[in-house]
Image 1 (cartoon, rainbow, N blue to C red):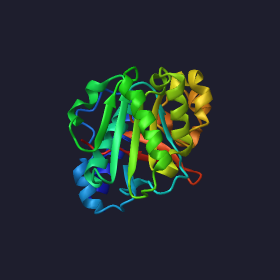
Image 2: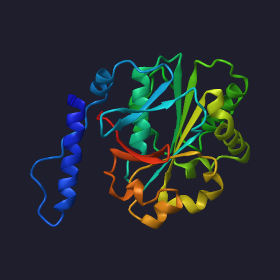
Image 3: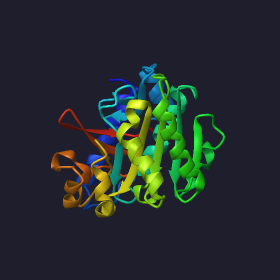
Length: 262
């Protein structure tokens, strides 16, 4: 077993023990930390040019998105408040800067909390950082839609990271129309949209949910709510560790994976 696999196994075992001993006082030993991103990538070795690193499964294998295969479509990341949705977006942004050149991949961010991304300001991979109400956010979506319409460069990709679907819906109707087009056609033109949604807010955005072929789940403790969003009991979303553990359906089965450390 590789060191990475062993460290993830230790973390899983510690979590299982903590949950089975919930009636007892907290353990004095902390849960083993997930391996740092740089260490994980070093052990994996060079990734294919078209791969976007999402995380690590419990067996130590990387979970990847093929940026040249549009089938998964835009990606909705949903979970309870505090489940790690923003942490996930920041993790894939960090991984992208380590595994792709700025010429091959860039990302743009729309979030109400731009201060959470300030450390990435000035990096060549970051094409834009705006709050939803800023005119720059609408201009950025328009520019991405225009670029995608004419893009014939199959070796360049752009990630559009929207932290909170509710926030995106504050934009004017024309911008929403461009965003809908990006959700529908973007992956086949090199634009991949990742959008977060607090699970309890899904009734307000039901008309948008059909746009997302792929859904990633952070922890959702309410089983009925999880079911409404597409997660069944086998997904284990109610048992995920907040901020570091996620679940997705792959080839009919549920795959749980971890975010590396910072």
